[in-house]
Structures are given as structure tokens and as C-alpha cells.
Image (cartoon, rainbow, N blue to C red; front, side, top):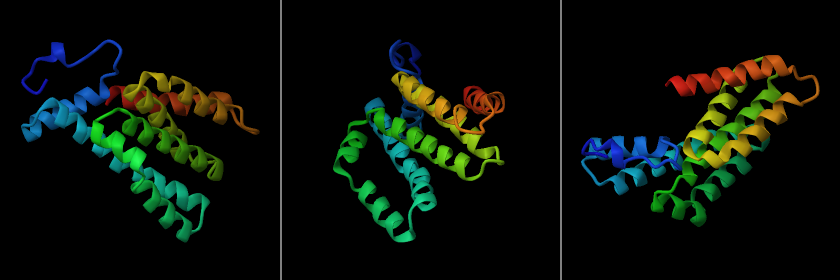
Amino acid sequence: FAAGDWNTAFHPRVPPYLPVVGGIFSYLFSCSGFMGVKLASLLMFSLSFLALIPLFRRIFSLRVTIIGGILAMFCSHYLRLVVAGLRESGKGFFFTLGAYALVRIYQEKQKKTGFLLLGLACGGMIYVRDDSVLAAILFVLTVTTAPGGNIRTHGLFIGEGRNCLTEA
């Protein structure tokens, strides 16, 4: 893939997000494709803390947020997934972003940024792993069936977030 052979980069059962990001890292750092995918997995693992810490902060105290962030950062199960270059770290990032978006939607009902974040999270989960459709459906159903929720408006913003990710 780094040499420009796009025919061997993709598989019909694997969504294109991780192979593309891994190929970009392979090209930029002149490393093997496997190392590029490992770097992409590491990037997604690192980015997951940008969603996890604000999520914890909205729910818990500062002390619990710091302890929870440290425990999550050094969890051996997640670190093994990152080192192996698997897609789960990307799925974990977008799932955490979706959970943060849900909390943000319920705490700030009038702002639309939570809906856009949720749309980006759902689209990103599906781009990383196609079996994440079920989690994306769960997120969307959680928002649209909430008391006082307007299905048409919420669906519009979630769809707009998905379109932003698709066109990017």
C-alpha cells in the first residue's frame, strides 16, 4: 500500500478507514504497512482519551476523573490491542466519542454540537468496523426515543454529522 499498490490494500470485509490511515503513516514514515497500521491504532488509542476525560469530567468529580483516566490509560487489555495494530482502538475512540456526545446531548439539550458529535461518532465507528452498526443504531435510538425528543430534528443533525464524515 505504501508503494502505491491500492489493489492489495483493501479487503471487501474490512472498512477502509484503518488501511488508509495506516497507509498514510507507512508513506510518511517510510515503514512497513503493518507498522503503519500499528501507528494508526496507537493514534486512535491516544485520541480516545480526548473523549474519555471530558466524559468522566461531566459525570464524576475531578479526583475520580484523574484516577479513571490513569486506570484506563494503563489497562493491559487495551494496550495489547494497540500493539497488535487491531481496529478495536479506533472503534473504542468513536464509541467513547459517542458516549460523550450522548451525555452532552442530555446535559445541553438546546445545543446542536452534541448531535453533530454523535453523527461523527456513529459514522466513524462504521468506517472502522462494520459490525459497529448495532452500536450506532443503539446511540441513535437512545437519542430519538428520549422523552421530549424530536425525531425529525435529531435525525437531521445525526445525518448531517454522518455526511460530514463521509465527505471528509
